[in-house]
Length: 317
Image (cartoon, rainbow, N blue to C red; front, side, top):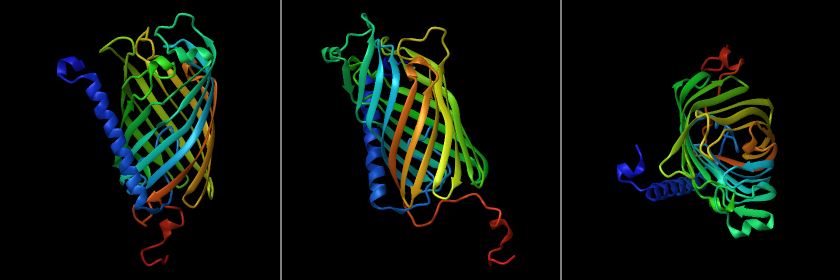
């Protein structure tokens, strides 16, 4: 139902969503302050955050990204996009529920080409060949109540993009987008594959109270390749359900591979991605560090190993 008919103004809704995002940040920080080391399952900069990792685990991360030939159709700009710092907080608030807040505090675009007649009026500062702006943040919750700690499990995923950017700076769209999806996961001793697919409700930047519904998807497979090393591959994106999408709500997609090295609660990761649509850019590089903590000293539930299946409670065969 349109916001004006419900009696709630768009600005009031955005303010409420922003306050909710800040509240979740405070909760995550408080969780870190009271926490101890964890057997890490959460992942910084994950395409899909693993659900069912055990309650209490908390991750705080920071990183950067660099994307070549990123396109911004609303502003008519194309160039290399850098983002730093990219902040990420994830908290397993229950045995099968993960809350996340992530986004880039600052973005910078080195403009290579520009449309002489963009759809919106740009800020005068954009004319010098570079533009900088705050990035948008995403608040998400994933849960997998169906299934056990090993094998197949299922649940849902809800995500809200909190507008923090200024569309006149050319990088963001200053819109509130919502994703509602079904989530699935499969876990073995060394593998964890998680994905979701559903609908993305995208606010049209140029048309008040207009939206574009898109098919949204994400998938990531994690492999514990060796002690302290974890590899992952995945994809994330959206496809518009309209033949002609409102400007700023078009298709997006990315393929990505990452490697993560962990020592105790500290993790260092690096990744390489490739855009599958024009607005997603060509290649992107990313790297960062994360610190993982837990609300209790008990480790998260892990899938049974081959040796563990042959021992009883007393530890005898």
